[in-house]
Length: 136
Image (cartoon, rainbow, N blue to C red):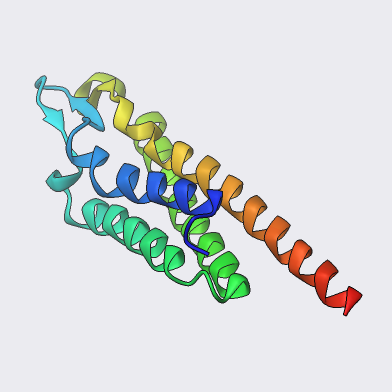
């Protein structure tokens, strides 16, 4: 059902992954230039893939199990992206490469939180349907 709360959570994930990385900077390099997601091809592909998975999951509302699995895959994708950002900000030498961390590095964290909330709502719907089936 498309009017459920998990749809709202998945729309937030799709908008956050599809638009915000190209508006908010990920970090500011040593020369003072802001680095956005479009600066690196694979980072922009990962953000677009995350947004696409969220949109696909919205329209799979009739198959809640597959919707749950797609959201889990999206969480894993966002965890890899978050791991890369942490590696990039902590492992490389400070002022030569990354001068300042941007707010865009937190987008995968917010996406993971909303995906967990969506999966919780999907699980609640699935449990409700199973309880009604038991009564028949």
